[in-house]
Image 1 (cartoon, rainbow, N blue to C red):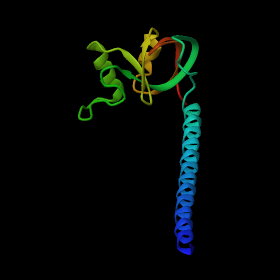
Image 2: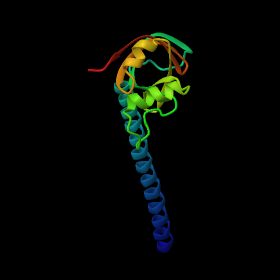
Image 3: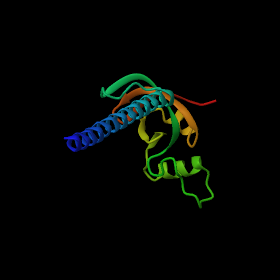
Length: 144
């Protein structure tokens, strides 16, 4: 009878330890996921001045980014002798449109060509009405 008890206690011990290890591992993974999610939310709040884009139209939003053209985006031709502003103007003459690049987001700029053209190739703050992935420009100013 003594041998059966030793065998049973060994199996019980292994099952309890496996369960405890799985529980500790699950708690560590869940804590890491919560910390990562809260860090990403905080970074998103710091980097953007726009409310979440769930509505299709938002008036009076201010978005910062680089004003450029839709063909090149934030990366202009490297081997050309043009500055980013000159490259964007050349692409605009070929049919591209003005865009504001903010991280991975690209917003097409509608209207305000005079103010936007002066800020080509620069980081700027654009204020206007957000319509999906387009901004109807009210004003644009360079970042200091």
